[in-house]
Length: 117
Image 1 (cartoon, helix red, strand yellow):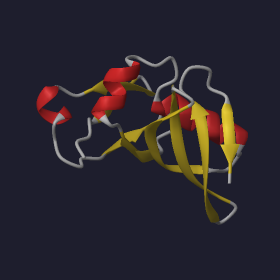
Image 2 (spheres, one colour; image 1 turned 90 degrees about the horizontal axis):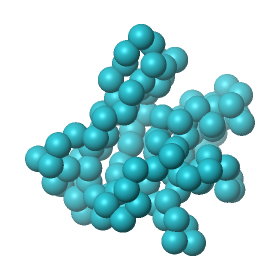
Image 3 (cartoon, one colour; image 1 turned 60 degrees about the vertical axis):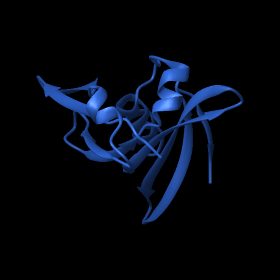
């Protein structure tokens, strides 16, 4: 499956996500590590088909990671993947909390946490 690459550039302590060009967007099974303003980093995976289908999303992967770490204080996000639920975009967020891996879905439009396991 082909994946787009999302790159974050830190400017004045704030991570600014940038979508890489077409050459990177067609890289096979590529994953990229992105950083947050706090210096933490995690992997992100974006399916170009979903990226094109949903276009720009109000909540990006870095913002979704911040939502998770506010909800689960002390959590460390390890991966974000763009997916869809009920016809809308979501971020599947994997994180470590309390010594175990967990996953939640974050609505990429509203920023609401949809569920956790």
